[in-house]
Length: 143
View 1: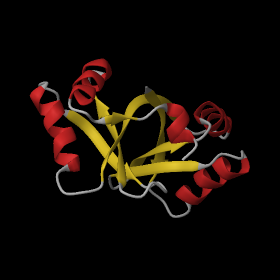
View 2 (view 1 turned 120 degrees about the horizontal axis):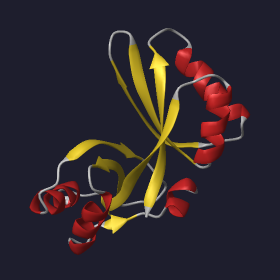
View 3 (view 1 turned 30 degrees about the vertical axis):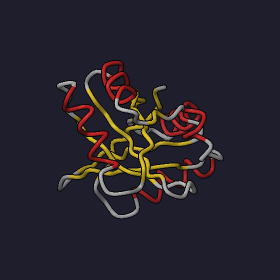
């Protein structure tokens, strides 16, 4: 139930994101979700794509610094309290979140979030116990 996320080191200069996304597009890979955290000189681009292993290979062949990381994808009701319930499940289990970002899908009434935590198994158990939907990689990659 873990999703593979690409983490790419990106120099903070004009056109760099265009270059990276062009490499992914030319490899026939579709981006499902993304997040970027930056500083003055560089950033970390985090991507969920439909073919993570192929994307990693294409990016490395282009000379980029890239790694694959396991993350959790959850589905929550798109209503007040839906996200709070998921966060409460983790807090009640004594877990913190390293980072997260939301992404969209075509499913009306649902919201989706990518989570990075320090103990995937414990987080999944806590979320499932609280009735939070854990998405499979197949579902996320085909959204």
